[in-house]
Length: 177
Image (cartoon, rainbow, N blue to C red; front, side, top):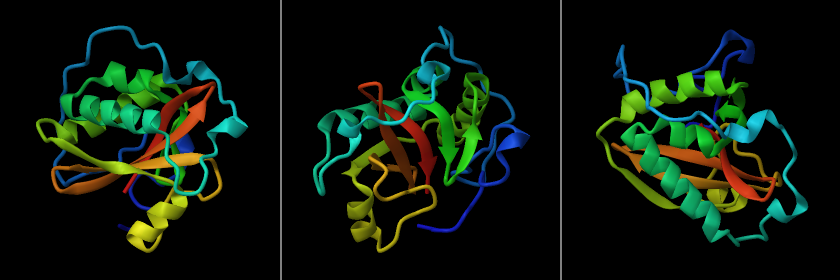
């Protein structure tokens, strides 16, 4: 897993950034129907003290949220992904989306790349346990931030979902590799 800044790690002010999962890009994708709610409701609160997991301890609810998000990701269910995400949304260590509209565009582009592939959720880790697994941590993974990280294999690529507890609920706050 690369630990440096990769695709999508450029300036946050230039619009949504895509985190390529493969060299394949699709020019069109039908939009998912439904409401666009969620995505943190524009609020950017800090995680509560309860969000900090004890060393080696992982909340099973966080893993369930990540599994649901990964399933929606491979099925192109953009509304579901937006509803279970929070802003700002990160790609590696950079902010990739600051609004729901930017997030929707980013997730549509990413979902195009994994359409038809299956997601295999490994497990959810703290930053320290992720470091033990890989020997280092990828861009965007920060120790001591109260975040959890779920490792997902999608079509031979390893993707790490970054989760943070906001207002009592686990949300996907970014994606890295």
